[in-house]
Amino acid sequence: MFTNSFRHAVCAGLLCVAPCLARADAIEDFYKGKTLSIITSTGAGGAYDLTARTLGRYLPKYLPGAPTVVVQNMPGAGHVRATNYMFAQAAKDGTVIATVSNGIPLYQVIDGKGARFDARKFNWLGSTGISNLLTVAWASSGVKSFEDAYRREIITGGTGAGSGTTMYPTVMNSVLGTKFKVVLGYTSSQEVDLAMERGEVAARSGASYGGWLAEHPDWIRGGKIVVLTQTGGVREADLPNVPLMQELGKTDEQNQLLKLISSPVAVGRPFLTAPEVPPERVAALRRAFDAVMKDEAFIAEAKKLELDLKPATGDQVRAIVEDSVGAPPDMIAKARAALEAAGGAAN
Image (cartoon, rainbow, N blue to C red; front, top):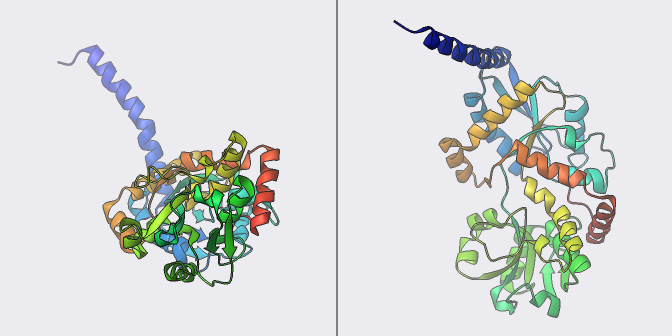
């Protein structure tokens, strides 16, 4: 026979479990038979679009109710069109999520033209991530370390104003006093790579570490290039002795400024849903996103497609966004000046 105390314990446990089951059933009932739209702020093709479509194939596996997933491209206004849509027009019931440029939070405070959103109010679901961006020199150029950039002119190839190939060396010149000389006229980053290999330029910036491991694995592992600095939130595990750009300042203010300018890379390739979506659905979407990031089949497919995969949770993305948008006004003004010298913001 069961004692009364045992019966009371069992009943108490069931009472605790029942609300959780009810919430799970409510999420499943809501999503069953529905369509979940993923908006991407880019056109068809490219890393953001490919990431969204790959994620969309796995998300129903982990979202109760297994909704049908469709991807809709909404390019325009430098990613602002899709971001505005998600803030003001998208359904606020958890049936529409989006991936937008990681530069959107910084754009909001640095430029803000046409922006009708507050990035802090989005429900950030997580990020598939992106490898740090590197500034490198061709080994035979004679550049041995970042310190050489203070002592001598280093010719680096650029594809245009606002590109990482141009923006990062120009920002470092402006903030740190380095002597990178950007030579424009190259139409693609691949052309800059070839120019560096031919000896036309000594260096280049804005290359994804993960991308280079896929395209030029012998350059890094074979010692053909010298990695001078990396741009991102934390150092790559494979490059523990290469400083982040935001660590190179001579003052705390310089490092904070460079951290703000680096913030888009730290955001990676983020996913969000609209403000005011019910918290329990936001939680379900976050759990599903996190589960996909650990799915072995998804990881294998992402690797096959050469997609950078360095996941971050919704809370991690939200913290970076709040730091960027909430930066002190004087720091924002200085970042704006540095980016204007480079030809544009990171968006």
